[in-house]
Length: 150
Ligand code: CA2
Image (cartoon, rainbow, N blue to C red; front, side):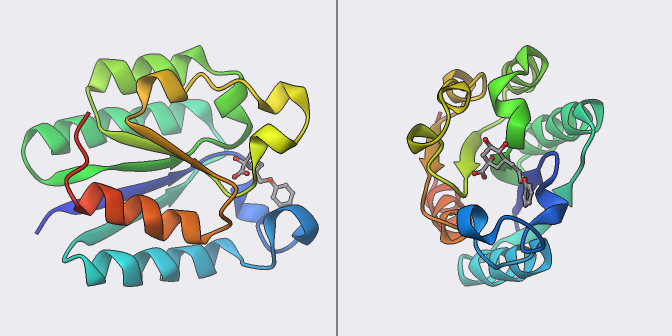
C-alpha cells in the first residue's frame, strides 16, 4: 500500500482557532481525519504532518522523494502556508527531491492581498488547488491516488 504525505506549514496548527472567516471552523485535527478517510477510500495510507519550521519541511520533502523513488509514496499534498510566497528553499527541495507535489491552499490566495498571488511552490508542483476550503485536501488526495503524473 502506497502512502500519501500531507505536509502543512507555518501557523496551520492554528486552524479553526482564529480567523474562521477566512479559513473556516475546521481544526487541523479535523483536516487530518478528513485526509485519513480520503486516503482509506483510495486504498492509501496517510502520513500527516505540520511544522512551523522551514528546515523541517525541507527534510520532509527529501524523505518523501526517497520514499516515492522506492515506490512507497504516491506524492505530497503541500500547504506551505506563508512560505509559499517567500521560499526559494522549498522550491529547490521539491525539485531536488523529484517528488510529486500538489500545492494546496484552503483560501483563494488570488482573491486576497497581492503578496499572496505569487507562489514559489507552483512552478515545482504538478498542480495547484486553492479556495475550495479543507475539501481541497480530499481532491488533492484523489488526484495523487489517480496517478496524476509530473
Ligand atoms: O489558504 C491557505 O491555505 C494558506 O496557505 C494559509 C496560510 C497563508 O499564509 C497562505 O497565504 C494561504 C496561513 C496559514 C494559516 O494561518 C492561520 C492564521 C491564523 C488563524 C488560522 C490560520
